[in-house]
Length: 216
Image (cartoon, rainbow, N blue to C red):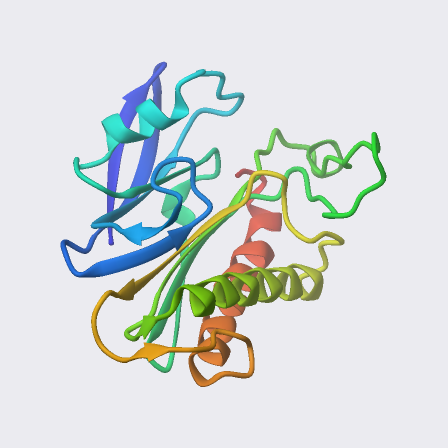
């Protein structure tokens, strides 16, 4: 993973880039390169607060190194990323929590903004990137995404945020595309458990650190 910077609209913005090369398969909810398939890189790009471009997929493709990859966006400062490891699993989270949301909120209910309460203009998205050293079936990859989401929510609740996440969260999980495939990715499977702990640690530390910063 490397951190790069660029300037847009007079604002210095960062981006996290993972360059894997060939031989990897990924599952992601990202706008660019989402779904399941072979991918060679992951980009978590910071954008300006109030981002209003109507071509986010093309924008992410411009920012990436070219070829097939995954591109996510956040208005949170990506240099405040939190890295965690557990038994060969790596997870990196960028955490912003201006507008924490409950997934099953009543229709039309407004999500409470923390910015006025905390006295600072804040932005919010939680993006998670995780890497496993073992191949997985498609079903196990979907199971692993569930595990990552459950671990994220557990971390947020333990950190004192009454929410399941934010409305713009994204994630990406990368695994090798060769070798014996794991059949399960749930939180009680060997690799799912390690994945859950790594994601939980990175998100919880990011959520706890987000409060006193008074920023992203």
